[in-house]
Image (tube, rainbow, N blue to C red):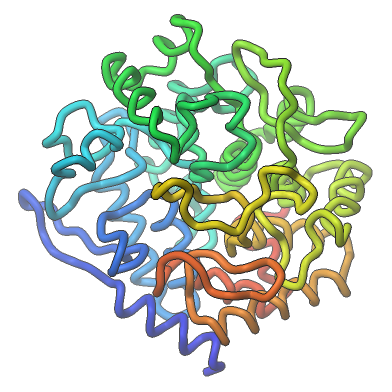
Length: 395
């Protein structure tokens, strides 16, 4: 077993948590035992993808635990409190309607079907997965084109990404007034139609819809790639940008999310090559450890982990999951040399620094939480054949 694989295995095994609540068994990978102990939706999906390299039974158990938390309509919240509910001052920042809620009332990027296809089997044969993705579409497809919309920045998993600064302003995540955004949405029971009706921002975020699109393809459903191009592709710049209702006039900073449609297997090549040009630009994203979460030239780019005592994620460092999406795309487009460089940079960084939450894009310095499970996705980079995992080939 390689040094990378051994590091990943140790972290995954050391983070495994199992038990029982109200007669329901659970088993999942804590995202980081020292900092994040609950079950987070997309963290578990990424952990299941990593577990497939060691113990596919744990991949299934991880995803089955998410499914066990689903409401009757298939909805699964972005955080599930198997052992104890959120308490104290944390309740102010968590998307729960009541303090004793079993899970949050908001979503994360819907990766379930993609993870199941990669690690377990055909998700279309599991009715609970079908119901879950149908629930996402029913609740969040506001315009009838298959794309999903978000009511808070943290639903994207990208938390304090600068792309949200001009949308939510002082209520963006990691700023003191974010608690007011949560409070107001709690009063509306986190119903996106109520948010929209009140004239507050709702967002069709790009990376969220890339993952949603990959899950739909894993289920054998029609592609939403044409809809994403129609709504979010900015032809003059060649980038994908979030759509916002009500519309805003402020410029949206360029972040790694703008490039993530590279991962869509049916993205037209001419669009993919334009995105790749941005990725391979050393003044934007092509760093020693690519790709930073914000383009280097953006005023909002920063490697700080805290701002005025508050954590603000996704404002500069490199994350393994977004790099993985980009890698899938450049492998598909035939950029063998660049794909190999990206893979080497990330695997060697994880070998050296361990599984950290994110990494310095210039020097690979490990940052954020330690023993961070989803960074085991670096295992995917070991074989270019993994770049198509989770999406069945069309006949």
